[in-house]
Length: 160
Image (cartoon, rainbow, N blue to C red; front, side, top):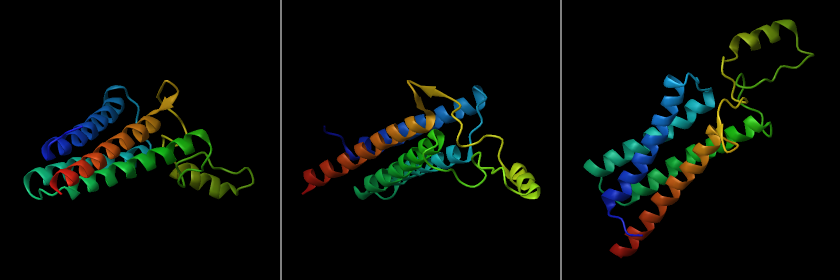
């Protein structure tokens, strides 16, 4: 595996851009609105793209690849958490999951219902091969992080 610094920055940025484009495709074209955790998973991809831009035009340092890897790992972990919420292994953030107790006071139930978003984080709206969008984001983002880290390591070796 031999990539230039520029290629090492561009590939993760293009991959993150593709994942964002896919998310917006499902939201806008397919009519699948995102939940709060879905939106949270998008921001680290924006950061990966921003780091690539900064790394190409201003701060041309190999450690920019580590920042990309860290950002990609963060969205991968959010996606993994989201999968846990979807599968019922973990409870989701307040108001993002079906967490109403039958013994709650009617005023608390009413307040919870009014605060609950239309799209709940514990519902799978789309999957491929049994893996939800959050799962695919986690897998692909971890791949982006691994690529960026390995490129950083390789560039460090070639310079040293």
